[in-house]
Image (cartoon, rainbow, N blue to C red; front, side, top):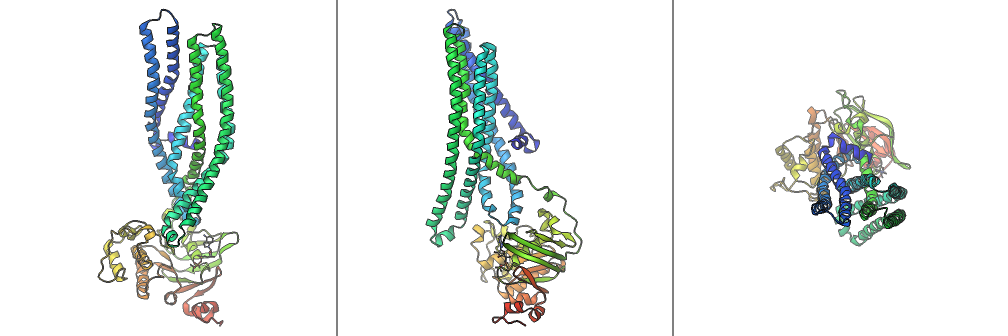
Length: 572
Ligand SMILES: Nc1ncnc2c1ncn2[C@@H]1O[C@H](COP(=O)(O)OP(=O)(O)OP(=O)(O)O)[C@@H](O)[C@H]1O
């Protein structure tokens, strides 16, 4: 809440004007809220007197009705100021959270990517609840209470101020106690809501997999289970809320009973006018009735605050990433010094890998499935951070290069090439590619993107993850894009696996020609021809570098390498 308020007050959000306007309107609403009952008291006292002036009667009626209607109109006008503030806050948080979450998702390879969209989609609603419900509802109620107490103290016996103040304090104490208990349930409900968003998003993104495998029923059951878990968590939250309401309104009920009974007795004994009695009971009810809606707001706001807290953990962009990029030496030699990485306890990735990739060389990483090739490639690209050891480029630790700058030094293409559901043109010219569409088109024709004679429709939308393209076409598109990038080190994770040998050889030649012929090309491959062409082969087995040298070399001196390529493996 403190962070939120601080941000609303800061100039960088650009919502100060809305805040000032909202504040001014709210002050008027509070003044009217206090003045209205006072006008009613004056009206009743006038009526009680036998010789009241007609003009005075008219003015008090106008004042009472004007305050009542005016407060409602201004309250509605204030809502538009809140909406503007919420929009500005949502924009700020969503952009910051995305800036921080995307590199984190890239490096983490966990399920966070599924959680983030739901979290960000719920954010505007959560902000509305907190800003409108907590800040603009709770704050004014407290201010109105203080103003009303001051008026009562000036007009009526002080003991009523005391009773009303004690009642409100009792209500706040009950709310505080309840809110502490409520927070646990609100956090659990927020987690369950995130799980629902993730489950539904996953099912919708994989609609074809679900339907084609006849798994609709199963997925509906799982989605139903996620919704059930959310309902269960919410039920706990509403139970705790009911308890809190019972406690709150017992306190308020007792306070009101004492107030009205004592005031009734005072009116009976002539110590209080009927107008004062009406003023007192109007203030008492005007203050306590809005409190009842606070219960609902608190229930929703608890989940909303948990949601905002989640977003805030992302929205604080890592200062390290904003630091000036280190200056790299001209050489782009890649060196791995005793690097190990594991995905978690009992989940080894690679161990103790030391190697040297000279600038401009063509390196093939080979090895059996699951041996750790992609893990090594991602370590060399700086996507994963070594658990121990370090990787340097021209002597600089690549972990010190900020994410925003890394693509200028090392470009990595994952095994699964994710395409945007945008046009082919947008995908093929996606940064950092800087070639013309004509150059890309030439390459696509050379690699037979379509059958000869069929034109390429660059405006065609590619569908979710590029599903309107074949596996080979996706790779050709990606390679044509990379051909337009000048980068010292290019790492491809099986990006040519679906290409015919001629297109693959051609792609390798073109990619190596970039950056004045000095591009280091590192490719993970299961193809013998690629390993044979490489200047150096890194053979990975069981997470270790089992061999390093030319293909011929390794065939001669590494039995398991030889076994990889031969159908009948033999030691030698
Ligand atoms: N995010 C992850 N969390 C946990 N384990 C992982 C993760 N990613 C990979 N692994 C595990 O690390 C090991 C090495 O995986 P890696 O993807 O590096 O193998 P690979 O040699 O590239 O395999 P392939 O040839 O099949 O692509 C595997 O056992 C894999 O299950």
